[in-house]
Image 1 (cartoon, rainbow, N blue to C red):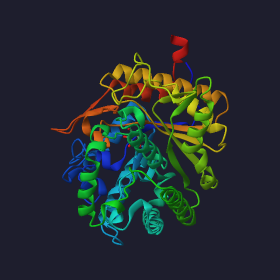
Image 2: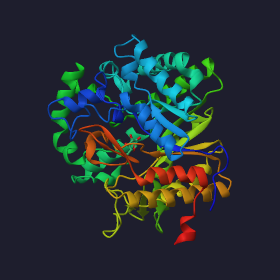
Image 3: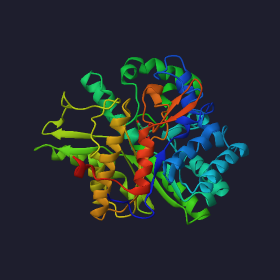
Image 4: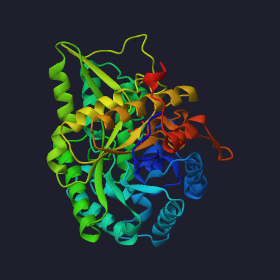
Amino acid sequence: MKKFPNGFMIGAATAAHQVEGNNVNSDFWAMEQVPNSTYKEPSLDAVDHYHRYKEDIQLLVDAGCDTYRFSIEWARIEPTKGHFNEAEIQHYREVLEFCHLKNVTPIVTLHHFSSPKWLISEGGWESETTIEYFGKYAHYVVSELGHLIPYICTINEANMGKQITKIMIKMSASNTKSSDGDVQVGLNMDTMKARMELYYRSLGETFGIDPRNVHTFLAPKTENGERIIMECHQKARSVIKALNPTIKVGITFSLYDHQALPGGEKFVEKEQHEDLLSYLPYLQEDDFLGVQNYSRKIHGPDGEVLKDENARLTKMGYEYYPEALENVLRFVSKHWDKPIIVTENGISTDSDEDRVEFIERALTGVLQCLDEGIHIIGYTHWSLLDNFEWQLGYAQTFGLIAVDRSTQTRYPKESLSFLGNIKKSGLHSFRELV
Ligand code: BGC
């Protein structure tokens, strides 16, 4: 039995739009509802975490976990440009106070994919003005709630736009459909290509702009858009530090474990550069880095190798490969010597036994990395609850807690207590057991 070091945070993560319900002023709400939407279904009430957060956090605590990563919904805080909503900031104040009451460390994300609808009408994630807007939003949140927040992730998966750009290029070049496991997020590849033009036409109408100027976060980015995301991060970081220098500030990245077969090394280097290393110059003053990993990709002399047809797959179509996390942590640690938080890692599956095994193998790897001296300070599993997996809707089940959405009843899974027990008593190394 091996224990995590004292103070090592273990818990679970969610994102506002995926769990709260009724984020009516967000761009996602609009994207889900337009004619020709590429979303399998709309988010609607989600899992009503907005009203049930106490029950959900209590379940996390009862299991033995001590950390909760969640996001604040910008569209609730600033539903129209320049108008900040006090009732909504009060809501998040209460969530944070509840965390403290229960001795849970909150890790707060300021932007987890969804933006206010008005932001997209103003040019969204390709517009210079977004830097200023994001800074003002961060300022409002931190001046109201900063004393309650020890860790802030400014932006979730800052590199996701680049990954989406790459699969779009791949899809149009090969004239074939990309598979759902190609990117670590729920995109509906079946309809993306077929309906893209019609969908964007509807979006143009909804946002009141030319369809070519619709720039949401979970969409392809230009180099300019990439820079804007990084400058938003830097802006928020300086605003936060000026208001409260004790808050630890970081950002999160979606990172595959890129592995090389002989001759594939140059592809691995390229992917690693694009996924993370190219962003590092913007992160030098950060306090921690958020690592998010779900699987691996293998590269041969001609590029990415297709998954073995016998490979064990998750419900998302990713290869079931929990060891990807430790490999990513080792790669990151070669380029980053400040603290690392595993801000997401998990699996969509109907088999909770598979999830328990996934957690056991992934955390065995984290323990191994700690032994090697890698500076990891926490792990938040994705996700606390089965929730709205973006374009793929509710059929994907990443949660440690199942939810019957017709009654919003919670059913904690075995994996939740398994994770909590690791926090309380440690972990049998999976490698010792097999
Ligand atoms: C995102 C989550 C998402 C998860 C599973 C990450 O890309 O941050 O919002 O639900 O992966 O796809």
